Image (cartoon, rainbow, N blue to C red):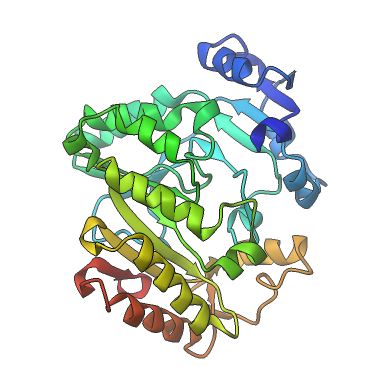
Length: 340
């Protein structure tokens, strides 16, 4: 997918001769390199059509000169981890989900890769000197989907293996079983348990309607099985749940498919449930850029700066899915966002 999309690669002048940039260019030999001063000259330019760029995204290679580790957002689940952080080595995603907060967060549809990953490692090590760290490394993109060109997950897994107090979560919708298998050889199976592959799952109707470019449910479940077989801690994320009038039958059918694919629930680390929610500022931008979007223009309620489904609908949806899951999973393995 990205081989077709990245016809041009914008490269900051400061990093143009670095080893990481040279490796990336070798992996995309047909892309035309263009040297720029700073990535925001492209990524932060006014008057851009992000929707058009999402159809024809280009690649921007840059150096991250800002803070690299952030405390986890209140709209994200911490799974009981007190020292909950996230980092973004890549901005934007090759998938284009209609509900994604990235549509309201960034004014540009191009993908930015920060090549100075070692600087992020140094920042993590400073925090590890004070306390353990639970770190989400794949929030603002899907790193597994980009692994063939970045190699970042291989480096993160190796780094995690040499730091006992570090645990990382890799959120993904990707179905590349061969990449998961390849990554499993970096550490021994016991150490692989420190790596959490968290697969976002949705009913096939939701995937077809709102998750453009992503693998279907069957493909994702094959990746889930591969993650389990490789010894990685494996999480299922039903987050965000998207409202449809027939959502009970959609989610019931999805759970039936999952149970057939994963007959032994003990193989799963846990699952998360959360209905769609988003900050007020991001939704404002999404509505501005997506006036025809069903997701963006739903009549949400606003609470503490975040929009969510109204009249208890969010809680109703989440409790319905929790009930379905409790037929084959113990309650202590089910995390609801409201309980965080």
